[in-house]
Amino acid sequence: MTIFGRISMINITAKEARENIGELMDTAQREPVSIEKHRRPVAVLISAAEYEQMKLERLQLKVTHGFDQLDRGEYSNRSVKDILNNAKEIHEKIQASSTS
Image 1 (cartoon, helix red, strand yellow):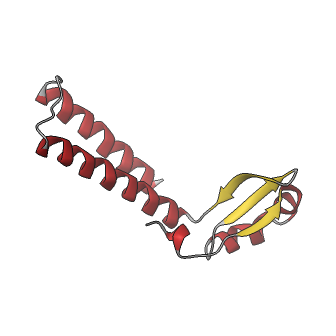
Image 2 (spheres, helix red, strand yellow):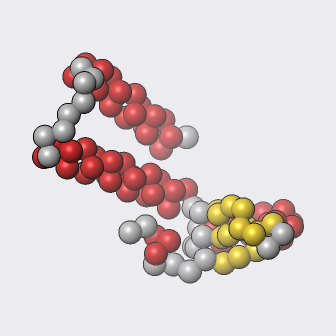
């Protein structure tokens, strides 16, 4: 379960977001902020830490799914070398995004 499940979300208009971006960034450190345009949600602003946590949870689900597939005897036609190279690329992207 992500942090969204435990914290309420406030709603503001796009105009309010433009006019109060500094305050909005501070608020997003404490709770997600839904930005609406024409009374429809168009974006959600969250803290960088919360975003990183969501990415980690998504990756953990993918890894779990992969192990479940292995347990069922399912496999890929890709070579081990290709899989390891792909894993290395993903790891490098994660490292780069966490340092930027």
